Each structure stands twice: as C-alpha cells, then as structure tokens.
Length: 152
Image (cartoon, rainbow, N blue to C red; front, side, top):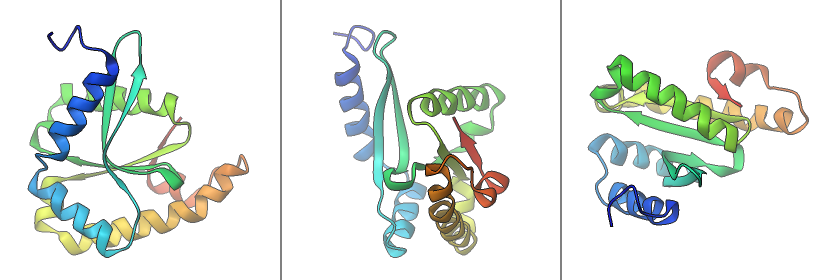
C-alpha cells in the first residue's frame, strides 16, 4: 500500500511516528526551552485537515490550551515555493483551529541565538495567555495581533 492509498489516520500516525523519532537538533533544543520554562506542549502534534483529500498536517510544537503553534524551520523554508506551501498549510490549519497563532523560528536562530529565542518564546507565550482570554470573549488581543501572525 503506497502513501496515496493509505487512510488519513494511518498517514497521520506514520508521519507522527517518523517525526517524533527523528527530531532535528534545533527541535530538541527548543523542546528543552519549553520544558525549562514549564510550558505544556505537544511535540509533533498531527491533525487531519481533509479526509476527502487525505491531507495530514504536523505541527512541531502545539500548545492546545491557548491554540499556539511553534514551527522550527530548516534551510529549505527560505525557498519561495516552500514559503507558499507554509502559508497554505497555516491557512488550512487555521480553518480547522480557529484563532490559532503561529510563531516561527529558524534552526539558525535556535542554534546561534538561544537566549534571544528563549526571550521571544517567553514573551510570545505570556502575551498569548493574556490575549487568549480576550479571544475567548470575541475580542482579539492587541499585543499578540500586533506582534505575531494569528490565522483564522
């Protein structure tokens, strides 16, 4: 059975298994930052965005409580075609998870500027916690909206 004939559930489980067991160095470091800051997260969280198309999307780090996603981008994300795919993927996830917030870091940022990444991570998380309660009340928080990209 090839990848096109697999069910979305089996695609999702296989993708999660593969990614969880082969994390990049930057992902492992970022995971350590989240643990150090006591931020609860799900690593390589997957979702089926379309059963008909069999679309499966994996989020590097997902914080369900406040609908926040951290993506760690390798070098190939600098490619224009990949950036278009990333944008489409964010839109697709945003349709399934209304009000989700994406924050992206590059591998280079995590490896070469760890303290700056930790500061941004802490600030983004704290801003989102405050703003999330406004989102729940149908008002979009000003801090997160101005600083980060909220989809949906």
